[in-house]
Image (cartoon, rainbow over all chains, first blue to last red; front, side):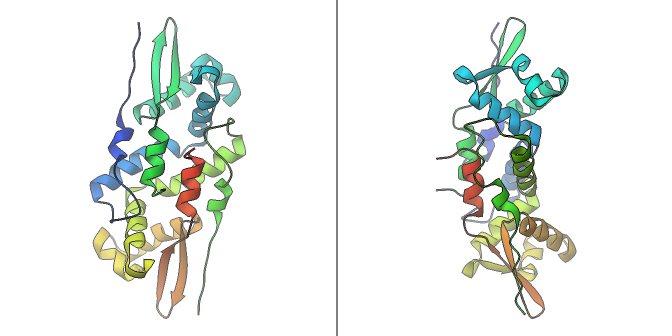
Length: 114
Length: 114
């Protein structure tokens, strides 16, 4: 069974901090996306997934390096997946996570980078 | 009297989410900086300062558009200043805020944008 979930980083797409003042709605959406990144464990997990061979990592590969339980790591990966930064593919017993192409670039652009 | 405070966005300088896995220390620093941006009011204030004539805004210009009290707005501006996104210059009664050049670009780069 294969299951892929990609959701809401696109909500922040097209908004930019530098230009016109952000509307209330756009600011809410961008803040929600930023919250997913405002946690040291989630940042480390994202960077580990990005650095994985084949660009994909299993929860089973990530628990030891961050030194947290599997449910805790799975929770953080879920937040990153729901925010649109990771995709999740289930194969057999394990879920595999990969960076969603362009998701970090979209946030970079929202922060006003050229 | 002129007073300028610029602090810790440089802590996240040189770290990147895409490349090697982030160290615990680098992840803590980057998450701390991201937390300053993970709030809709602070995002709106940053965008308002960026869009101000002359690139500078007074607290007195910002309270009405966000619909919050001056102490609340001042608190959010302080968080953004301490995180290194805004500089603060006091002239007479009022403090004026401006974007710190390059601060948002450094965060963009930390997120792995080219």
